[in-house]
Length: 384
Image 1 (cartoon, helix red, strand yellow):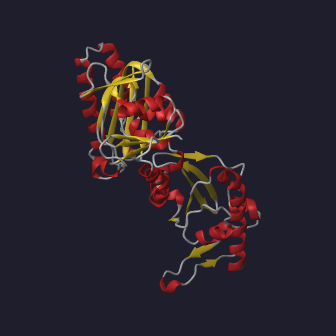
Image 2 (cartoon, rainbow, N blue to C red):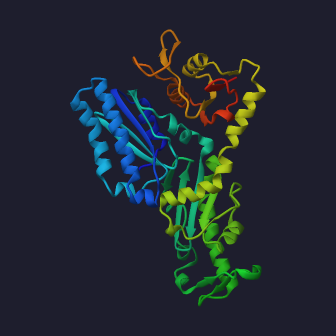
Image 3 (tube, rainbow, N blue to C red):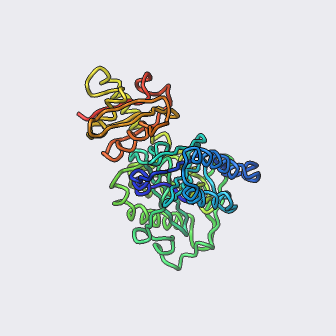
């Protein structure tokens, strides 16, 4: 299982070859579809269609076999299909292969060109779409950096105690404590154990949580991202009391983090964090509307492509599930359009998205009805 990160994205974005194949399929995490191998059959169907098109393009059979070998190995790997998220992205050429499991429900799509089609993954690179996850128990601390599309564990053992006993001393017998929550009548959590009074137990847990809070403080304050906590419900009020970080999300993922794998942790955290992830996008949309009658915005695709290559684009809005075919002449800075992908035409939306990210801009995939200027499939907010 592999999830996309910035280094992977740059590698895909810069890769060139005579024949590059990109395949996207929706997948299911569990249930009847997984048991019936629907995901596996879906990839088989897409690869069959791609192979047919490669033959129609007179691609050498040996190259087709090299491209298809790792794809067929995935199709035949039964264990691989037991660990899926919402979408699978595959990138293959005769000397390159990567696949990424991501929490994005792709529409089935494939793309054959001299470059990879990375537009569906572009939002994962938006810094404002990032957040942190702290999965904490009295005997374990895990920390993750995440986006809407990815999750990455971060090693924090050198920053925080990894368990309560490291902070308050090994004479504290955490396993001897039992906790139960009185659900009726709003009564508070009761602490029962052999290590001391309820108040002492709370003090020691708070000591541990304060040590975690202080250990993560410098790391968290570098980017000031939303922090989502995953812990058992009786612990969260104590963590809130110990917390000094200003961007702690007030809603907790309730439960034992050990009951979820990394994808499950990401899914639960995303449900809480998602409202925070669209704030910058919405601000940029409003800015576009405010400046729509000025030279600081454009919805002309040809102008946008040229502006992107000059590093003039601050924010690019691309209509999701849309496409614009054509070619771009870098030397003449000219765009030519076509109705299809034939004769060497490429996705101009894919080109603009890649180049905008490369030049330090932001890219948002937006449904048609939410585009700032709906008459065009691309809108750009330019740098001043």
